[in-house]
Image (cartoon, rainbow, N blue to C red):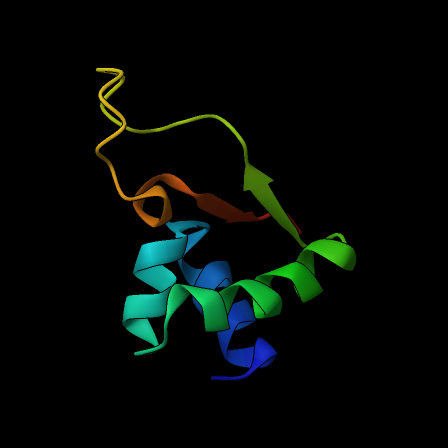
Length: 73
């Protein structure tokens, strides 16, 4: 996976969770985050801080399934 591949994926999807991105590229979430950080530093990707989980408050959701990134340009 390269930053360019992530760019193309997010441009097509517009919005994706960290888990979905890592799964698509068959990478771990820990290996995927630095690539997303690169695009965030360039102002191309926004990380959504709000929880998109079930809002039940149980904290059982895997954080990677609710950590959402959006291509903004």
